[in-house]
Length: 405
Image (cartoon, rainbow, N blue to C red; front, top):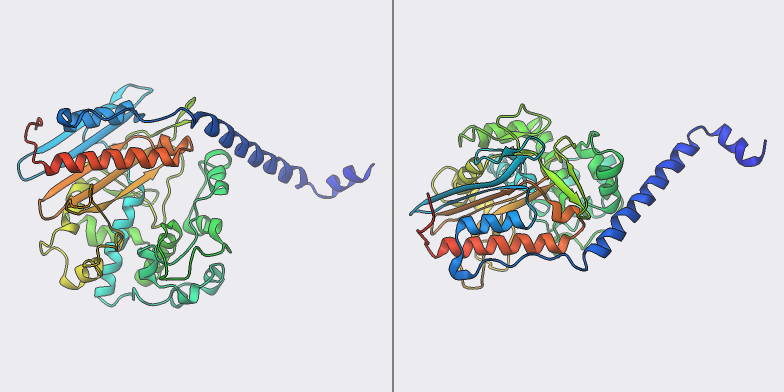
């Protein structure tokens, strides 16, 4: 028996580890080569001319650019547009309906931010306490500067935490263990012991890591899963009848299938992949429920206490500040009014929900893929999102009443 054979005999898991390493290396190659080749010629189709744009034409545009199915809801004081296109289930040719539910991904952050603001106002947690006061040492020790990072900074993405999203995580979720369990503690390990992006409070970088930690802090303060707080504080009082927390609650609506078209040649139904949960994502909802929720949050209509709203929009006069407690403010041009909301993307689903409080305009869009990101084109997904969102903002602000109701 030679030395290599003897070593293998003594370590029965050696070859398993080697095979797993080989699969990961192969996955990196599979991810990199097609993306580099395809990105040379893949681009979005042009928007309809500005004088010919309607809500329906923009919905059609999103479908042409890769969304197997899509839903759009626009509400203004003058009208309501609701439209759907494509299919919710390609295998069975089920038409997409306006009431189909989607995984809303990072729009969950808005729910987490509101819950945290409410609990702070009630003195049930402290947004300005450092996270080492609320989380165990064996967890916080893996994050540099943890003794200086506050919950508020994590919710506003100013903590400097490195994001859990990485090539290693993508390989595990897409190739190695796409249907496995991904609780918050497993997700957080992808960011363990990584150097910070900056010192706490001295920059801004979007980080799912902070929201995973925030979910655990809410769990600790409430003494139960944050899904219970979301339901008790938001879902039930605002009457969101078709909103639920994935893997924790029973579905309360018909979920559209989601699809990825990896590298533009491998289309797969990802509906049974494990959804992202843990505070950074987790909810499923409908365009109707999200419209109701975002309008309640963005408008000062008495639903939330003054103390809660003070925390939610702390720093609003500073126009350089674009992100609050789970809420993003954006506008289509320098002189346009601000919209408040969030976007979200998970394998198989992409969405955004925004409200303009002064004009009372609500816009919610669902697409049954984040395929542009799955192909590896983060730049292209950003271009798709910004182009569609800004076109919808501008059309709604014009007060166009020629849309079908």
